[in-house]
Length: 218
Image 1 (cartoon, rainbow, N blue to C red):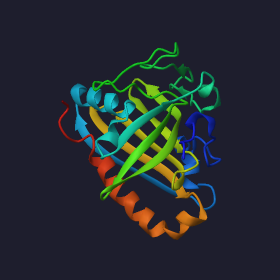
Image 2: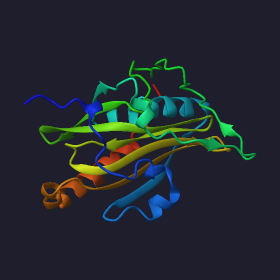
Image 3: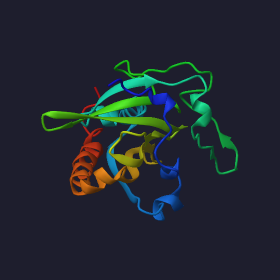
């Protein structure tokens, strides 16, 4: 059976961008379970540069055991994706600090392109001797001087319905923090039957996510 063309599929949940909104994390859509945790992953400019390069090039997922197969996007892909606007203390919009808006690709140290809104991908999740293929789409990217990250939403065929987000922040004292957020529920009735197993998988992989950027910066 041929694989679906991912950029032709809509996400399988309604609250796109919900991991960016504090109120949505506190009061998620009915049936969805929220999750948020932040950990300190180091200190100083070298750790910060390593962390944000890794996050924007799928590093948290790859360092947690996933393989990433990029599936592209149509020219109009970004038009249907959520791009948050941030503001400084004076209320001035903060423009992108890294990725830019000219459409040029920017790459991480391992050659993986930085994420952009509308990117679709297959995430190959290792579960014992098996790998599950999870289709996702990048729904927004945060690209500020001291905060960078992105979120992806699930597509039809994913066992879950919802959104995962990964951010890194550089605090005023130079410390670097990783935040993992999500809202999720089983995607279909079949996966509801397997919800206990899905929850165990989420716990295991979230622990990996939170440790993913704490190692060497090389």
